[in-house]
Length: 310
Ligand SMILES: [Zn+2]
Image 1 (spheres, rainbow, N blue to C red):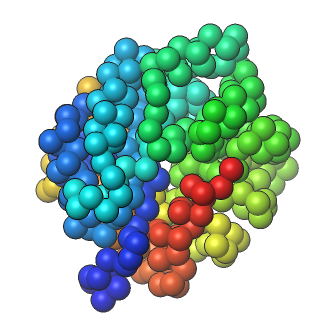
Image 2: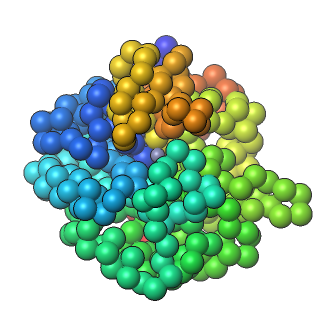
């Protein structure tokens, strides 16, 4: 354990993407559980977090947003109740079925006629803080969705996508400046069709976030991303409710997820989120060869800057 990780920095780490931890699932948690999550995260050095929702049927999403938003409105920065919720992150529903990874394809939507965006916004309700959403711009109506969500103040992050570079350029023009769990749930890099990975590495004006548990990305890929994008990489946990609990099977989101030696897999064998919270991700990034100061910036300063943008 490094001395740096023993002493949480001030103002603390910022996690843009976390589904839960310590047995708390942000999709279903009530206020007491959310308090427990916030305190547990603070004890692990996190000062701001973005409760992240996987796509579910809209009535279920509406209930989750209502619970989360009411709890968030009871919080003030520095209120002593643990990590502060910066906003809700919607990981979908406007993402690619072909790149949905562990997300349930049945709850995904597209933006063809605008009605699904209206239904989504109505289900989300008035959102406190800075909402974040992961969008695939190549889905029907995708670029219009990026534009509409960015105009409404969402931080639009490109992810779960197989868009080509031209479409990604258009998404950038429409207001998307960031990418979700870079390297995961993206079309792979091809030498004649660089896709989201080549595009993200090239564009200096685009930031990315990465899961640094060393299972989602190899140490070499993690180093490559940091090398190609100095000062443009944020660490996220993408942690799921069993994070911080012992190995074993857990019922999460209607299926059994198995936690074993630092990985989480669903019955189909896919990686389904991580159990590596940001303090641990810092240590692992360092063990992969990322400089300590750079890793810290990625867990604290870079995400703070991303949130302050656009
Ligand atoms: Zn996630």
